[in-house]
Length: 500
Image (cartoon, rainbow, N blue to C red; front, side, top):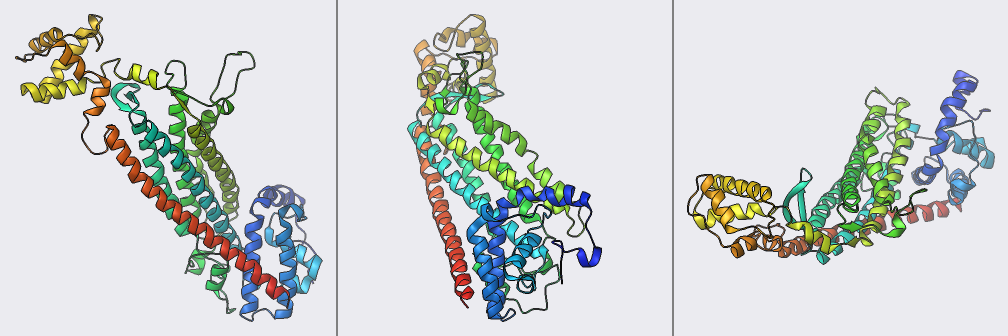
């Protein structure tokens, strides 16, 4: 009979103290976070063993009774053995203590740690993806609400961090909302490839026991199975890599939003202000209001650039199911926590953001950002080629800056002089006409292409994205409900069989 807590006793004898301290024990920190996933996998596997007759009902009842006690107590009540970093070893040791070695030792019938761990991985990632979708939906709703409110709030648009063309704050926010809507698509795609059952794949070749793989998949709330037994175990890891890639891309997008707010909340810009509760101050400078929420998200986004590389580095060099795979589990836990925290910080930041409309409007047309419209008007009114008009306006801007004039004080005479100097003739606008063309609000109103900064287009885009978000929300509600219903059914079925 087995005496030691480890599986190696019969084949390898006593384990080294060094391997226990530096390999086994190092795995323990992640185990409580994945405890529920492993517990559900155990329940589904044993329920199926009983239903298929692989495990006698009297033995199954005892085993399921003990597993349910462990499952209901959760990680907080479980007495982890500090010597082992394997959940299988932990659970078998606990079962042997409660129902004896003969019953406890039957849990692994027809199963390997490969498909057991892979199944727990998929449950953990599935739950993480669903939670991320829920949090991103909340952020999307906040963005859409703010975008509608500021569809006509004119502000400077930037390229190369220089004034480019005016746009509206609502148009900017809709750009972000469109990006996050694509993130929702990616999260759903990753979920579809994650939420598949792998139990029954065993070590890699399947098993001679007549297991019902589709039954365990249904008990765990999966939408189907991974067919190939090796693909279903720990051999194929692209499902984790895809999940991390999607989350890293989401974090990159969150980071850009946070960076814009971070920059625009500075005194030099003064376009937005972060809520007091999301900011911090200095230990020496009492006037400081530091946008901590944005800084946190910016920092995590920087780390996210390395997430996929870290995950793939754990897995790309392995040729079978090397223990390198274990490190990917730890990476995923931190990635999940960081992503969810960032989503929640940005949702509250957007929901409580103060927008300085007057400051935005003041700067919108202050530094010649509407002159592309002036060039277009020269083409329309005086039949110039766009390149010729571009040269005229470029010279006009240079001369105006040299003379200390602004768009509000520009003169038709200076435009005519610039046209003459660049070889264009017949260009003549009154001061009033010129200043109307250079007006930032007028610029926004004259945009006619679909998806432009025109407030009507911003609102139309908000309607479009809102419909897409509603579809994602409906899917999310259904997916969460189906998973909860399946897990509830699993727990009820296990309790029923435990009664004998």
